[in-house]
Each structure stands twice: as C-alpha cells, then as structure tokens.
Length: 273
Image (cartoon, rainbow, N blue to C red):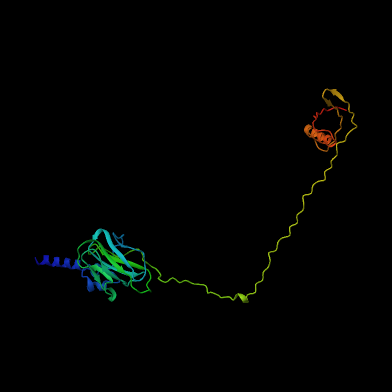
C-alpha cells in the first residue's frame, strides 16, 4: 500500500512540473523555454503537431496581435513568449482570451510577458492577445511556444511566422527651394536655326514637236446633195505613236483653227504611197 502511494505521488509531481505551476513559479524557465531539468534539454526532432498562428505579420509599437495555439492532438502544457528575432528575451505583454486553465507569467521581471497553463488538463487550443511595446528600437518579432504533449514528449520553441516591424517614420527628402530674382537673370536666347532648303525644280526634258506637215491639198468638190465631201491627202509625221482618234482630233482642231465650221465629220484612211 505504501509503495503504491509513493508511485502515485511521484507521477503527480512529474505532471505538475510541465509548466503547470504558473505565475512566478516558472518564470525561471523563460528565455530558454525548457520544461524543466527532469524532462531533459532535448525536445522532439520530428515536425511539431502544434502551430502558433498570428493574426498579422506586420506591426508598429502599441499594436495588438491575436495569437492562437492549436494542434492535431491535445497538449498538456505550454510556455508562450514573444522574442525579438535572433534573441531569447521576452518582449511585449499578453492578455488572456478564450480557454480555461491559462495564466500570465512575469518573464524578465515584466508582468504578463509570458503565458502558460495553471493546470495540466489537456488543451486543444489557446487564444491570447499580444501587445507590442512602445519601444521604437525593436525589430522583427517571433512568437514562440514550447508544447508539452506528455512529460517526456515535447517540442521546444515552435515559432510563428515572422511579424515584421514597420517603420512609423517615413523620411521624406525635399529638395531645397531656391528663390531667384528674375531681374538679375540674364537670358540668352538663341533662335532656332532653320536649315536652308534648296529646291530644284523638276527639269523637264525639252520636247521637240514637229508640226504636222501639210502637203498641198487638192480639193475636189463632190456633189453629194445638201452637203459636200472633201478628200484631204495629208502626210503626218510625229515623234510619238499616235492613235487614230488622236490624229483625227488634231486634224479637226487645225481645220477649225483655219476657219472651217465645226459641223463636219472626219474619217481616216491610210493610203500607201
């Protein structure tokens, strides 16, 4: 009977050691985030079944960010802190949200700078709020959690996504304004130089026009009733090829120029000489 009670009390002590004391009793475990010497200093090397989710990935001093702890299997203990990237000192403060059996931890002597559990009851999720400190010197932040599945199975410092620090001061460089007295300015204006364009007219080739040579014309009147027919024997010479219509046109114009009334008809017949 005594042996049974001794073993039972020992197992209870192991469970309490998993961050379950809460408050200042586990403040010495802040920074390293190790669950305690009796559990060893080496956590699991396999991927963690637990995640740390942040509601935003950027912040400015004074911003609040929702932090959710969850997993595919329940966890019996945890220690949550926010560290500056590359550091292991808790920064900012937490306030409790949903979930029972959780407690604030004064890491680094700063009240509420960490969160843990107040009992060893299994939990499937925890929701808290982290408030960024007012210090403008902080850089990017990682929210880290050590999860205890059992007293011998745990994952150390499971990180959230990086919460990047946004600059609150935007440096705007403005070019100095220079006031110039217009009366003291000497302005030299150079007119636009126009190119001199030499235009050469299109040179037309000299055209040699040989007038139609009129041979002595023998006009023989022909009695044809109310009108007359005349036969003109003409020799034409031209430097270009002329169609029949062009020849008739030029003959007609020449005859009219010489006084013949325009109500006549011309026909062309070619006679071999």
